[in-house]
Image 1 (cartoon, rainbow, N blue to C red):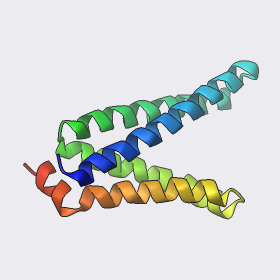
Image 2: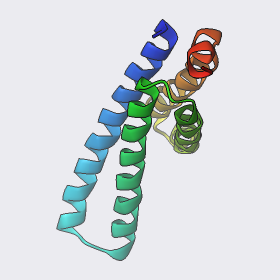
Image 3: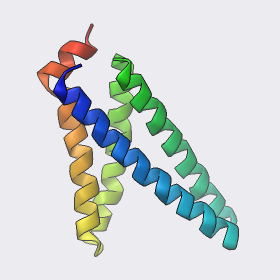
Image 4: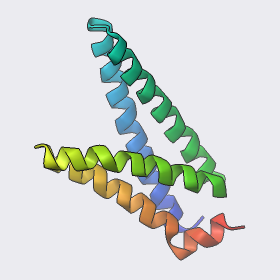
Length: 118
């Protein structure tokens, strides 16, 4: 496994743990004050967390299709990062945005392409 793919997977695991923590906090808040909107946002968080988990596992097995899924998830993450940067949480938005861009960059580098194109 090339270092570029290994680093991308480590960054994705860090993102997964962060999203899982946010989801856990959100579930606690949802239990305190249930509403239909909160339920839908929580369902989206669960789907996103599960998708990220399975994409990381697939990348670890050198799945070419998983790279496209990771690209899609990282592009979804970039939108809230932008609004965090412009909305007052610039430090958090920069961390999230830079990690998403780093994963995308690592997955298109030649060593990763060679391994995932087999």
